[in-house]
View 1 (cartoon, one colour):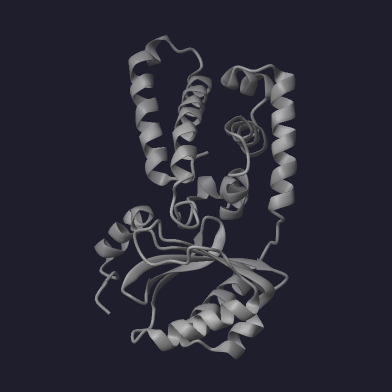
View 2 (cartoon, rainbow, N blue to C red):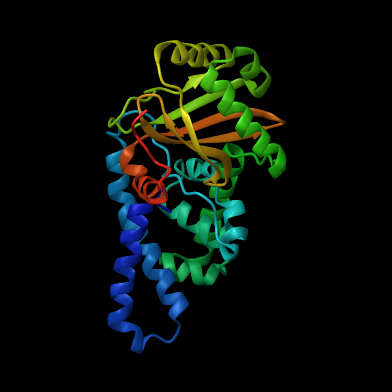
Length: 275
C-alpha cells in the first residue's frame, strides 16, 4: 500500500495499539485488523502524495530482500514494478486491487472496509487491474538465468565493459535512480542503450574505486544485488528482465530507504563504507 517499510511498521504499530484496546470485544479479528490497517494506510497515503510532489529525483519503493516461505505466493505478485504501477492509482483503487486481487478478499468484505458499495468496489478493482496490466507486463525469469544475468551485469557495469553491457541490455533500457536528494543519483530517468553505455563508461573513468558486490538477492520481486558503489555508497540494484535482456534498472541509494540493510550488513560484518 505504501511502498515504505518504515511507514508500514508505523501503521502496524498503530493498528496493534487499537487492537489491544478493543480485542476483547471483537468477534472477527481478521476483518477488524484488515479494516483498521487499510484505513490507516489510506490516511497515510494522503500525506505521502503531498511529500512525493516535492521529492528530489525519481521515487522508488524501499528495497526488501527475500521472503519467508509463507510470504512466497504473495511476493510472486507484489513486485517493484507492481508498486510503481500502483503509484498511478488512486488510494481507493490501490486498496481495492490489493485486497481483491492479491489477498483474495470477498467484495462485500472490501466494501465494508472501504465504506463503499460492492458495485463501486468492483469498479475500483477493475479499473486498477487494467491500469496495472497496461503498466506492468509480466516477464518470468528462470532463477538460474536471473542469477547469471545479475552477475554478468554487475561485472560489466563495474568494468565499464561496453561490449558485455550491449549483450545484456535491451535497446530501450531505462535506469531509475533514487537518491532522495541525500546522495548523488540521476535526477531523471536515463533511457536508451547508447546513453546507458556512455553513462557506465563515464563512471568507470571518473571513479578510482570500483563497486563491491555484497550479495545477490531478490529485491522487491526482481533479481538484483546489494553493493557498495563508487563513492562508498550503499545501494541496491534491481533488474527487470524481458526476453533475456535487461529492460529496466532500478537503483536505490537514498540512505533513509536503506537503513534496514545497512544494519543487516553491518551486523554481518560485510558492510564497510571505506573503499
